[in-house]
Image 1 (tube, one colour):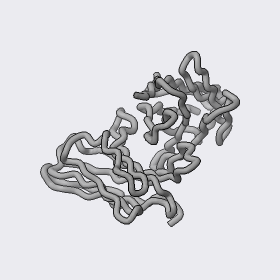
Image 2: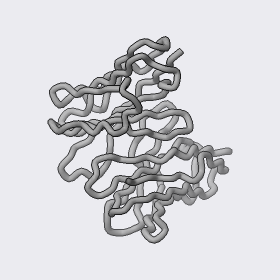
Image 3: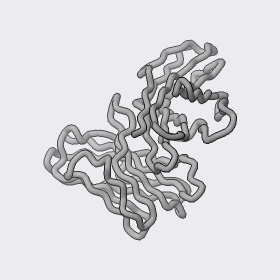
Length: 113
Length: 115
């Protein structure tokens, strides 16, 4: 069975600082990986996804993530955050052949001025 | 509609009562999912519908929970004899299949509070 672990439940950073949100997964087969974002009082929306090909994927709002198969990781990064990036971020995995998307527990990103 | 619609947006009920939560997916989306979002627990998969296939009910936490999808469109999640631990935000999502890439389109959720 697939599973996802987000190592940090909360990450506080200062505005314009870089940030990395960590995600590790486990699966016995090939996977598709996703990051979703939930802004305050809004629904979840897709930030970026890895399906195949280049291991570095770019998403909306300047975010990017790198798929590392040997480390079974898919960490999310942004070189310089803004107040508007304050949100909860969810990593998710779907194993090849499966229809279920399994989510991590979420990381709450707080940006301090 | 343009997006996934869920109702009610907020529901307060008393312990032991039954509740129904409704989801209207994006038109043409054949797959529909229910997740539960509890504080500090992330998103917990509940059930998945795909066309006319038997639903994947593997995530339903107890037999008090059930869901149906009528006519391949609207879905209703029913919780019988609600308990306080059922308090959470219930999220519905839909997507296309065939070339499925995993992007789910979520509604804004139904917040359930059991007193």
